[in-house]
Amino acid sequence: MSTAKPHILLYPFPDSGHIIPLLDLTRLLLTRGLTVTISVTSENLSLLDPLLSHHLACQVGVPRVVFSPSGAIGLSMFFTLWKDLPKVDYPSDVNYLLSIPNFPNCPVLPWYQVPQLYRMFKEGDPDWEFQRNGSLDNIASWGIVLNTSTCLEQVYIDYIKKQVGHDRVWAVGPILPTHSVGHIDHGRPSSVPCHELIEWLDARKEGSVVYV
Image (cartoon, rainbow, N blue to C red; front, side, top):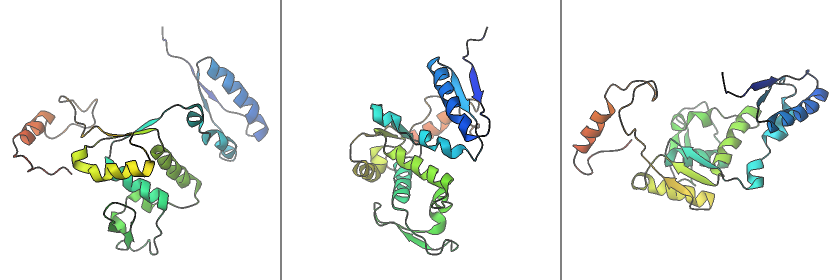
């Protein structure tokens, strides 16, 4: 006998007047521990935006910790881009130089080297604004866990701490599997077993390996 809880899909009649009563029903179902998904038409999706943007966790004081698998430089770069939205005069020019003055070392990057997600961003577009706000909300979390170490990215870790205004930023990496695992539970199979990679690294001279 299955012990899984039912997952209920609710689809209101496609008229805005039917959605509020359905949400009331949804609340009752949620109090019984059920999983509920609401499906609405694109025309009515805007009616649910206040619920999606309701920062309940912050209001009730629930701490949220975000994990960044890309390390400190990737997270801090995206944060700077999403926050400042530096303007690009000629986005069709892949060699256009974009200055990021508030970022550590003040890099000037050709447009093609800027993260693709930002290059595709359309200011004012609801989908892209949702992406941007989600990234900024991650930075606003109570704490941030990074897949890096202070000896590799101290300058960017310090930059993140300065931007968020607290020290709850933890470097816990680089995270490597503790044993050789197969493709079933850890992505596709590696061409070289993990233990051989570790043995090769251990055989190198101190300070002779560059982490990329």
